[in-house]
Length: 285
Ligand code: SAM
Image: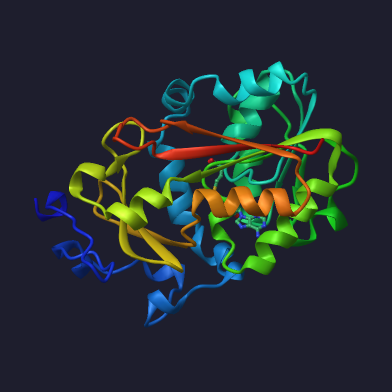
C-alpha cells in the first residue's frame, strides 16, 4: 500500500512522497494553490461536514478519554475551577467531558456546523444539553457574557490563527472573560520538533488506533499543512500556523497573563522522543 510509504520533509520543508498525488478533498475549497491559503478566516471552510462526521465516527470518544487521561480535569479541579468556557468546542469532546465532571460549562466555537454537531453529540453521549455560543475568538466578548474561572482552548485549535494581530486579539478576549484569578489552558502540537527536526514516517500520528493518520504535507515557518487520511481512502487537509512554544509563552505574558507553565504530554497513541502536544497553563493573577 503506497499510502504507508515513508514521508520525509526535505530541506525546503516539502514532504516528498507519493501521497501528494492523491488529490485534496474538493469540499474544503483550498483553490488551485493550497499553500497560499494562510488566512485566519479560512477555518470555517476546512471543517466541512464529511471531515467532521468521519472524524467523529472513527475516533471513539471512550478511547480518546483513555488516551487523554484526566490531565485537564485534574488540573482544573486542583485550581478550584467551577465554571469553564470551552472556546474551541469543535464536536464537543471536551465540553461533554467537562459537563460530566461537574463543571459549569459554556461551549463556544466560530463554526456553526461544529456547534450543531457538538449539540447532537451532547445529547447522544449522556443526554447533556450543551450551552452553545457561536463566536469567533477575535470578538468573543461581543457574544459571550459573564466571567469564568477557566477558559480552555484545546485540540490544537489556536494554530488556526494566521496573523500575530489575530493571536493577540484572541488572547486578549480570552483574558477578558476570565475572573481576576482565572486560568487559560491552551494546547498545541509540538511544532518546534516538526520545524527543527522534520518528519519521518515514524512520526505519523495515529488517532486512537490506526484508523486515521495525520501527517504534515508541507511545512515552512508560516504554514503547516496537515493531511488526514481515512480508511476509505478519502483525505482532508488543515492549513495551520506552526506555533513555536516560546513564542506562544511570550504572547501569553505580553497580553497580561502573570505566569505561564508549559507541560509536555502524549495525547495520541503514538509516543515519540519529543512530546506530541504542549499544554500552556496561563494564570491571570
Ligand atoms: N477542542 C475540540 C477537539 O479537540 O476535538 C475541537 C478542536 S478543532 C481542531 C478546532 C476548533 O476551533 C474548530 O471547531 C474551529 O471551528 C475552531 N476555531 C478555529 N478558529 C477559530 C476562531 N477564530 N474563532 C472561533 N473558533 C475557531
